[in-house]
Image (cartoon, rainbow, N blue to C red; front, side, top):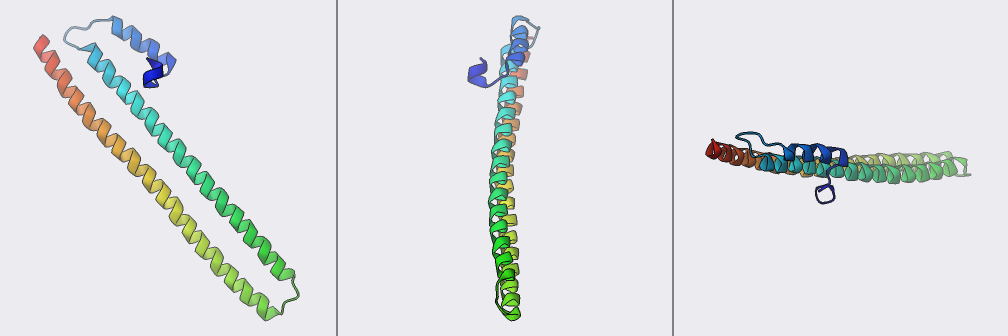
Length: 146
């Protein structure tokens, strides 16, 4: 069961214990399947969050590498024998480039988080809809048994 549904072993033992018991008016199989789907949803949500975190770390890493390269270039410019006017011009260009990169980086981070949130919201909406359908089905089965 845990290999197919990604349910942790400690939870699988609890599920197996419930399968053995019969409760009047309750379809335990349907109830447990719904619970398994909820656990699967949580696993999928965790996977999305992990992937998003990895993407953000890669974006930040790339941004920092570029920032240090630019900083190194600026230090070389400041130590060069260029005229003060050339150094000031280069400093202004460098500052503008840094600000542009910061804005682009912020947009990339926002886009990554937005896509992740969209995936999570869509998954959650689907799971909630399915849960409501499962609840209606369970109630109908319970009503027929009674």
